[in-house]
Image 1: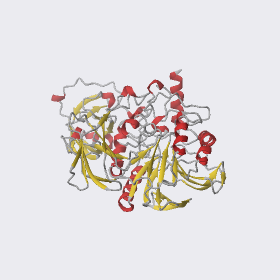
Image 2: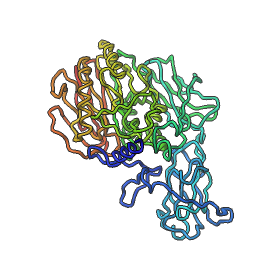
Image 3: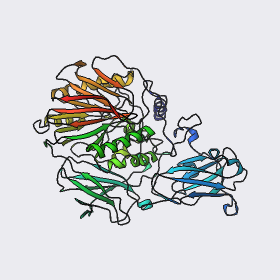
Image 4: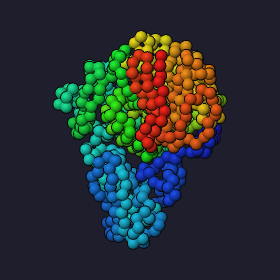
Length: 572
């Protein structure tokens, strides 16, 4: 029965639900077919399958394979050069392996030699982007994709190679006197530290830390626990305490081996502080060129508009079982996540799976009522990478549900992937959190999750979920006078009127769905709903300006033109 369920889930995810279509998993080199469409890491032609022949005497071969430069920065480009290849064929492939001794069938990706115009003459070159996977890597030339004839020099990375502090990101803890610093590297035996201070002299040092990692066996199903797994390295977590609120600090993280560049952050506003502030929100990002544009524009916003934090409403990297995508995604967002807190919630593509429930992180039973669109969106990750790589405030349950105050706003995050019906553990927590909000201190309350409570985009299966979320959660939000519902999931943008029970009314809740940060946009039609005030199908993000205790100004920025295409005042 497990096999049947797994196959059914794969088919559902492959053909897509609600007519949305299937979203390919990018290969490490982001290879494209001749027609420009993306090669899918989930398809058979992603892998070199063998059988492989490694019995040739490479020392006596005239074939040469070289990588230049031999040392490269993370996300830097190298040129792979080859010559002296005997009897080349159009099926020759150059595989890339991290570590260099990995199994021939487990290459990160490969180069099709026909991409070089001189391949038939036995020589050529090709340029690719490489990411630091915390181990020495190498290329191998296989004639016909099977017979090994050359191995390249080992590729190494600058700024500490395997020990380089990578994927630096910040998170708030819920206390205005704290900031959490996290990063990734190979295992470091000693000397883990964050140096910090109000000046670039970094006159203070924090050496207390926790460290996490995860293995293939921790995952719930393939490909996350089989062909899609590469060593995740170690995730270091340092908490800085006794800081001054709303104060700029400089910091560097790493070890005695190597320290990162010097970054800076500003500690949070204390809950109740009436200082105006700005923040950014979006969901459904991934690593596409459109996601890169969103990341670039948000980094620009941070520098120009004093953005205090970024909130990502689920569907984060879209790794879907392929570990290298986490490395690529974190490199993409590091310029912003290293200078402002990067807060996240759990989406279906981080969590959903069909088998392996004995490995479910918190031992929850499957939340799969008949009306809920579950599937296997994480492709076996079952949130293990996400839970290890992020650390949210601890007043709820990890990053599943939590809340924090920032100035005039109380922010509540809950999981739309877990049971939120009355009587559930999550519902009780949500009810208690909302009941205890001090509206004199934080007059605005924002509640957020991944899947939307309101969305007029056509999609019968997902639409049922919105109806049931309204049935089970909307009354609670209305009772406690929540001001804003903030969602994603659909790859589009939509704004409602102030709505309650599908009717526009002044005492209702305004909902924003911002699922357009980079993943392939939806193409569905829209239901005609009176409560739908505006919808848009372009890549973009949301910008919030909290002006005072009665007014927040929201703007949706379209990436392609870097301009505001929709805006609204959220008032009390």
